[in-house]
Image 1 (tube, rainbow, N blue to C red):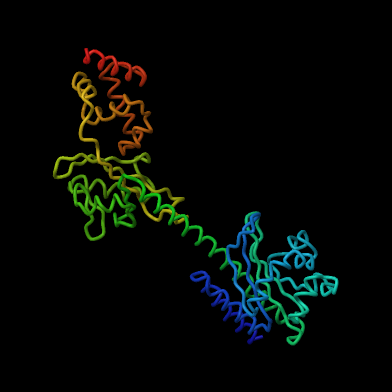
Image 2 (cartoon, helix red, strand yellow; image 1 turned 60 degrees about the horizontal axis):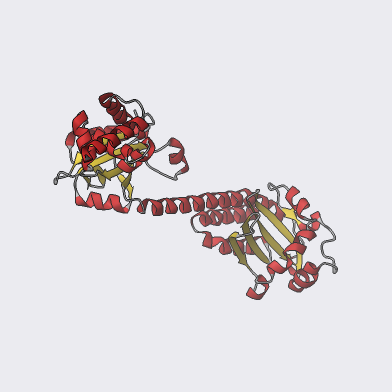
Length: 378
């Protein structure tokens, strides 16, 4: 019993190493074959219904035999009683082929005649790893005639390692999904012309896209100091730090975003917006930070007719910028995206414009701007 527990303990340690490096699975299979006396071992994990392999490893089979495995897959399933019988086998228990089908070693079977018999296979143990609508996987351990029948001790050792192998496979799948998701996310962010910076609760920079890096390196109106995001305006910088801390604690005052208007040393206008990262995203580690900071360079000038209209009605610079986007046909959400503002901020500016011009709808505002342009053209 002590030898059995020691063998299982050694294998379990190796199995969890595979979470970090899946390339270690062949070594695990080799060790399993050596410690529990099997001829060869194979791990297969694939997507359904496409059959695309997600993970494959093998130990103890010559390359020419390994290449022939797909030729016998269908008959191998039949030896277990067919797909329906296989799907009914409990994942919590190792399965032994001779117990599921005592007549599996039949000369009428192509699998037995062309595969198992030439290799000297006496019996097979299967450890189910995953059985879902989207994926299926198992570890197959084949016993040679020279190694004798599969014993109760062999079965007990397999029972000890089974849940750990299943857990390692599950963790590996999650980590791979996250790795691909995060990699794709970073790739997408690099294509965005607006600066995007991900920070933690203390404003330490976790990731920045290309535009964000360039803006930080310029040093105005934002900067990176000792790896932390800062605004060059001390008062606004304190407010930004407070907003990020609130976002990290989950009670940001404005889930639509907090805006900070800034200017660089040349007088160029910027809008810095903070959006809290949802608790769900942090839990799933897709975005492992407290807040996302967007840095948007504002258009320095307005088209002349819009500037004249803004002057006539006493619009502020921020209201005039929003007016220009609305007059060009953008809705609130689109205008917010183009200006790097939150939709709530654009709605506030738009309401002020309505109050100053006396209109109540965007369509009426666009018509008023158009009529003003016609009058000025005359």
